[in-house]
Image 1 (cartoon, helix red, strand yellow):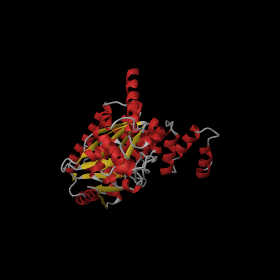
Image 2: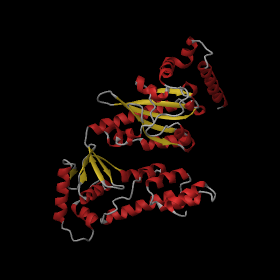
Image 3: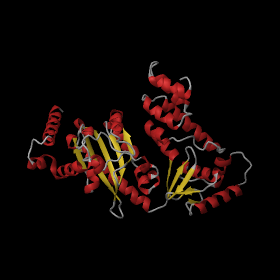
Image 4: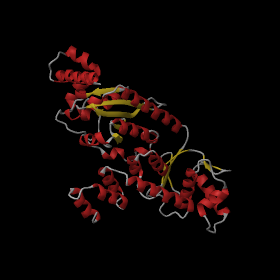
Length: 396
């Protein structure tokens, strides 16, 4: 381990001496390679070395999750975030222009990432911040790593970054980049293999999604359904049916679906058949019969939340939570499932030790009194955050 650290420190010193102009052009190519040397030249023409953070473009991240690319990314961000947290890294996914669309962060890298705007909306193309792995992966359409002072701006010269492009399997077009970054002294060649693996997974998911319609259910907060990225206008009852089918991927026969939806309410089986028939028509035949089941690839935010809780990924769970699950439903099964989900989330909140996570959750869900109570347990009596919380929410 000591030898490895010595080698990394010596590599950093050689790069820094090149940046100071202490070596010839030929030596520069030998030490850092053509890609880095060329990027430095382009960066000097576009970016000030006094740049301390990436420019922000928040609007670029608004609807990406509803695109096919966003849906493909969603299939592996849980594992990518777990890897980042366990390895002391920050993980990111960008669009084709170098704008970050999603990040997942270890506690050790969170402040560093926020300080330089390595967050959703941050622009990490070469013209915005100079040499970095994400920009090189976009430019050359191949995996790239940038170590320490190889980065152009000093703000990230304590980092090492690894990036791999995500390609559209049909057109070959580069859609974005998967990136892993950490401090330079944690450099590992295995990280480059990791980003290649995740980029390939996103490409394979894209191929699968492009071959079949995709149904997305957003039932946390304001209920919405999307088919192939487009909103579908459905009645509250039809949305409830979709949720029940999502909770039972093996399918439900007519009697079980009726009991789950209506309980003891005096609603005829014929009424339910009509509802399902109309729903099937609205979704272009996406519902099978005998038993009733979903016939298309689907994704549901409430199942994502459940899976995050199952895996102990409380940060992802809180990020997925945008409000109560079907707050107006009268379905006995859905009410019971909602109560269980809310209870599990609350239990997880009381195990959170990071005040920032709770503050972010309260910013999105001000009525989350369990998060407020947990903050009261975590913050010292003289912490300035207590005064802010008292002004905003009342006494903690």
